[in-house]
Length: 175
Length: 138
Image (cartoon, rainbow over all chains, first blue to last red):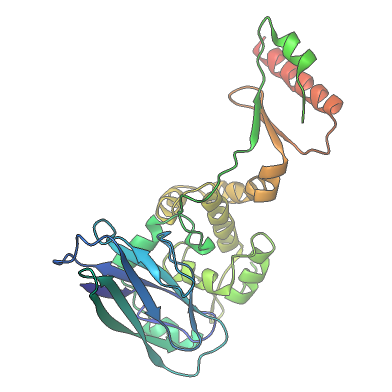
């Protein structure tokens, strides 16, 4: 049901960044429209809003539709140094199987931490996760590709030189 | 050649874009968005070349490009061309985009003016540039 992959095999204890790729594998429940993914992180490890642009609840549950959503991509990061070498991230997928029966699947992935100096020697990358990250627009911004975004185009005026151009110059109102 | 640590690079880039923090600098380096670090003495360091790459990446992400397409494009360009892309970053600053207006004079020439430019001066700029361009054609 869930497959969890980390972009980096190990991340910096302090000011580190990594990506968690949650793949939603096809199952008998794949037609269910309303489902929620919750992430449990150890103290000191944080996540940005999901990079797919799915809506999130106030308690940070990520709403997905199993009939067409295939994955969830999350940026994980540390700020001040964490004082452990490894910790688990638990991902739970929950949905209503029938009218009143909730079903839950949980899976965990181990995240390892190292100092910046140690990182260079032991870092391994999962290229498929990295490729998925690179397909997204502006992951550094953590801005989801939501339909709610309002794109304001810069004002652009085109200069037209035709027989009526003098009228445009005379009567144009600049605001 | 100046050598920088990741922290110094982040400090320089944060003046351009506050989102370019230390962890993003490190991450972009690890995933190959910028060239491998250079060896100066016995230390692997960032150089001005890396700063140009980072600035070009910031500029192109603002235009909506994905990291994959940015990486592909930058691979084919010279460092001078990459530096030139970075120099255009300020044009894509969200505040500038919202405030300023861009006047397309011809397919090859556009002028961006801030609201501080008066309507009278704006017209003079347009007329002068249009005249220059017409002169070039003749």
